Amino acid sequence: MNMQLGRGKTVRRAYGIDEIALVPGPRTLDPSLADTHWQLGGIDREIPIIASAMDGVVDVAMAIRLSQLGALGVLNLEGIQTRYDDPNPVLDRIASVGKDEFVGLMQTLYAEPIKPALITQRIQAIKAGGGVAAVSLTPAGASRFGETVAAAGADLVFVQATVVSTAHLSPETVTPLDLHNFCRDMPMPVVLGNCVTYEVALNLMKAGAAGVLVGIGPGAACTSRGVLGVGVPQATAVADCAAARDDYYQESGRYVPIVADGGLVTGGDICKCLACGADGVMIGSPFARAAEAPGRGYHWGMATPSPVLP
Image: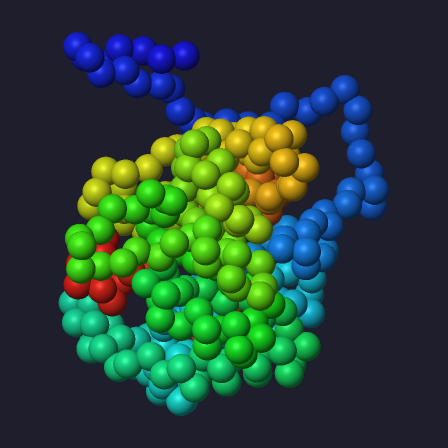
């Protein structure tokens, strides 16, 4: 229900995950009867959890291990793993630096060019280890490296940005990524995000998305809400985008999973997102604490090294 914020401005009450709780129903269920299987891009998984495409969270070994456990890990193809032949010394430097030097160091380290040969090498290493090669690119990166990713045989491609839409306006000198053509031309399923509204989620599905990431600003490493004031509380965002998924399924017969992305730390957070309509969740900081994570206990957002992105 809309309310008036001021003359000519209306607002709507929205809810964050921390503001809601799950009400027990009239029946209880033995945990052994619960089925958490789901499908993303035609890939069957036992656990509806995806590790975020952060350099401190997923590397080749982590992606393989998560695949073995029945989950997914997404490798950032514009990060440390594709800029350096041996990323371990770089990760050691990041873990050892203080807060005051962190941003400067990151911008220096990420100034190293992305090497297409390393993109191919990382994807093939995940597949050789028996893992699902799920990888992530920004829209600009997808334009530059899409053909390389396709030739390397990735199983699933995530095209991620702070905010994604099918109607991006750019200067005449810049050609934005056409999401419809990209989804159509890539030989593997493409997951698009991030978004927080019914309308944008529906447009991404119509563009050919195999999955839609939902969430702007709720993550521990995300500053979009503080820097730009952009975002929708996650419970409402998930519910709205899930409604778009259901309406699109009724219209087209094609089911497009919704993935809640950001700000999920506890099992309760995950359960509440699933109850709001998410098919799966993407989490970062809980995985960053794992001994198997490459970040030595630290994690940082994909936009951290950028001098212009929040």
